[in-house]
Image (cartoon, rainbow, N blue to C red; front, side, top):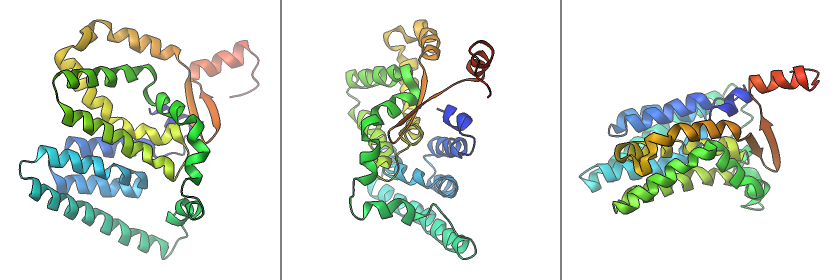
Length: 244
């Protein structure tokens, strides 16, 4: 999923992934989660789309449900509040091009205006996040279903919906959908624990075959094939491409 950042060096996604991972690791400590979340907002505001999922995870893992709801509202509210004050301060001395108006103004006439620009290729953007590794979450879903662990199944589905909903305000489907990566952590923990379908014995085959699937990048109706350094060298040396 980090190939997008490598291919398009100006993106700040790698830090976003790290902060989301820290939120997941420290999910039982909401004050710390709020800190990582606030830093995530400063880095890339789209982490806000993950709030419903993190709130659900915290609620399910906390014995006192009513207290969990209050804590979620308070700590995420604090993070949003501090972030808002930070943006007001930044806006006071510097123009911000990609502000809320930039993303929301096109929706004033048609709520699905941005969504329609990427609709045809969203499935391809979603596939590009893990490519053949998507078989791992599918196996985990099967395992959770056998265990009647419907809460985790719902959690995984909610995560996908939260990430996918970014398509309502932006159309870089491959880049936006990489934020679904926590689903892979949940899935791997499950199938490695139970060795679902003997996964450990053939996991390396998925890794090998995954290298053979082209890495595609989709944005709106544009599809680009991202190439590795080795592929670029081969193109230059053997196929006469003039430059990098």
